[in-house]
Amino acid sequence: MRMPRALSRTAYSRYGRELLKEVLDGPIPNHIAMIMDGNRRYAAEILDSDRNEGHRKGEEKIEEMLEWCLELKIKYVTVYAFSTENFKRDKDEVEFIMTLSERALHRMADNKKIHENKVRIRVFGDHSTLPDSVKEAIRYADERTSSYSDFNFNVAMAYGSRQEIISAVKDIARKVANHELEVDDISEETFSEHLYTSDIPDPDLVLRTSGEVRISNFLLWQLAYSELYFTDVYWPGFRYIDFLRAIRSYQQRIRRYGE
Ligand code: IPE
Ligand code: IPE
Ligand code: MG
Image (cartoon, rainbow, N blue to C red):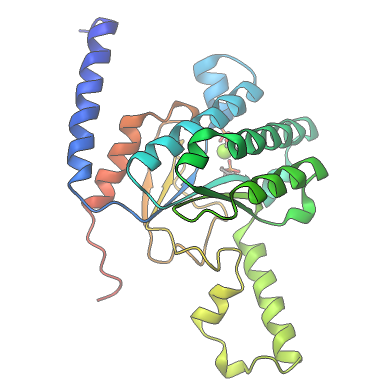
């Protein structure tokens, strides 16, 4: 039997509170990374609307999710906002997402909660491929938050992990050619230092929404020992309890690192 709406809301919030209590008793991930997928399917199947509405709702969800992460004191949050391969989409869709991202970055850079919690905002990826207005928004968010370090909100934008790796290889090769680096001195640490994420610890938990069980060119090097969590909900429909369930699942894992 379907529960009356008001009752089901109460039950959910009680369940949410119980989950929160449970989660607060366990280890909280230091870094959570999210592949926010399913905006267009959410628009078509749930909203019966156009894909832009899905992207708009997806963007709102990022700001909501960041508050959940701050509540749990998760120090690093990374979101996959736009991949190198997403440039292959319709021109109209790419333009819409770029405008949305530009506005979102400005809004977040001015958001009271970002400043109260001292959240540093960083956007990484191949910025040369982004429109000037987005580059300007990235600069603005960076400038307004660069002195903060309590929390870190990272946005992977025009990002592809293979491209990032190639770019690191080229930088290292140049240093070797210029005798700034010896081939035998190339280690995991040196390599990591040449990635966009050089001063960001590897993710503890990588979460993907929308039911797809793949990585789609996200942080391939960095997630070698991350716990992976996949959920069927589309990103704009990702709820607080889905978030808490993901953290609880992480807490139930035994991380062995090969030992
Ligand atoms: C994620 O949702 C947002 C981006 C990749 C920019 P999608 O736009 O991929 O939506 P689906 O996965 O096709 O539903
Ligand atoms: C991954 O989603 C990229 C982002 C969430 C930004 P995609 O929708 O682009 O990935 P595929 O095409 O399903 O692999
Ligand atoms: Mg997708």
